[in-house]
Image 1: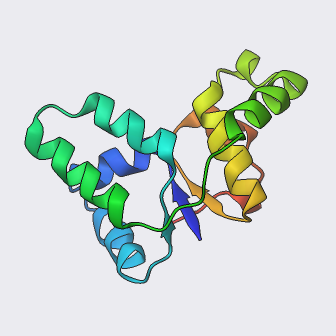
Image 2: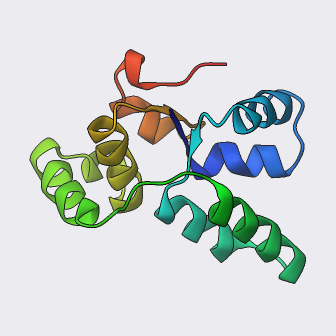
Length: 125
């Protein structure tokens, strides 16, 4: 399974040719896992009701695991590994902890998050 970070979802919703067809294909194959903080960020940046509805529909229909306790775990790991010093906040830390726990790859364009990911944790197009 693949966890798609906010940065990659934004490119998908903009219809960028380097992202849209690949993510669409992965969605159709059921290989994308929704993560609550990512969709919270997407909703936070939505410009109108239509965008909020589109984002919400993806959230409701995609497979997901519970995030219960992940922010706590992310805070602990982030503190131990000094991720905040590298510009990686709590949301990206929680995405990383979540992906590691469920053996998922992360699709992101966020350079700070990429800086703490192992190569085999990254989804590469």
